[in-house]
Length: 380
Image (cartoon, rainbow, N blue to C red):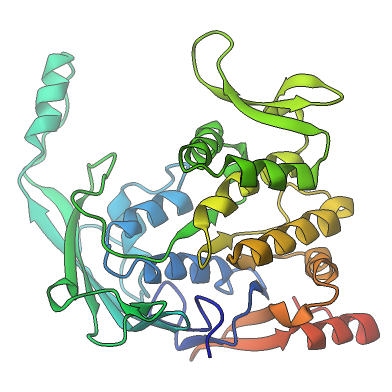
């Protein structure tokens, strides 16, 4: 009988993932492997799979991957979410892509098929009017490019905790995304989904994200749980507040027993990441998923065991499932030490790309602990 939201996952055609499958997922899961083995891609695919009726999630995914704006357009970012197989990345050439995913557990999606193809449309007249009001000249193309994305969910079996998620009329969802759209907002009722949050290596450094997560925690009356988590990490923290000393941009301040009222920026990376985790975990509630890319980022090696012990205990208490990636052997050992008596709650997966498929080797917690303690095996 399933005990976690995700117990099995299969992905094919997303980025470089081919014939990829994870079995036996546990409460805490860590993905390891060489660079470009597909670890981050797995987290991205899962964020889509947990929102099977919402193609808008692709925009959020693309912005997390390219937060610095390296890609020329969001259309280019979306194209590279699909296995290329030698296709050109030239935006002037038509593109068609597709991928498939499925999952089983308390959250079940028998098959999600995703397709993408190029479209063209009329120029954005609203953008021209805004430029005219600012007396700014802009190049007006003859047409604008975009993509049409379609999610097709196989009928039957799609369920969250035993209850069907999608009536027949919601099995197909289509959305159009244009290259000159700077911001995309979901319109209408959000389709049913499994609650997820994705934390990237730089998330804890973004003031806007920290303020948004703490605000959500307070609005949804999770402040007590948030403070319990923060104090579990650092007992000297007495309160976490959102303040604006000069009446401008709000920032997070910590009321600290030794330092008094101090901005979050003066504290170490480990505490800043702990604050973000503490505001995020309670909002997921029971059954939610937390995706963490490069879980060790911002945490000194001497603090890894303490941070991960705190994280794993919090995830167990709140019923949240964690799926993380790492390049650090010290992080793997710290996760093992964080589950001293319940190593059956941990699973590690080594990913390796081959010409035919994405290979996966699974280590359960007990086996991983023995291999590390007795043989010093480097599972990375």
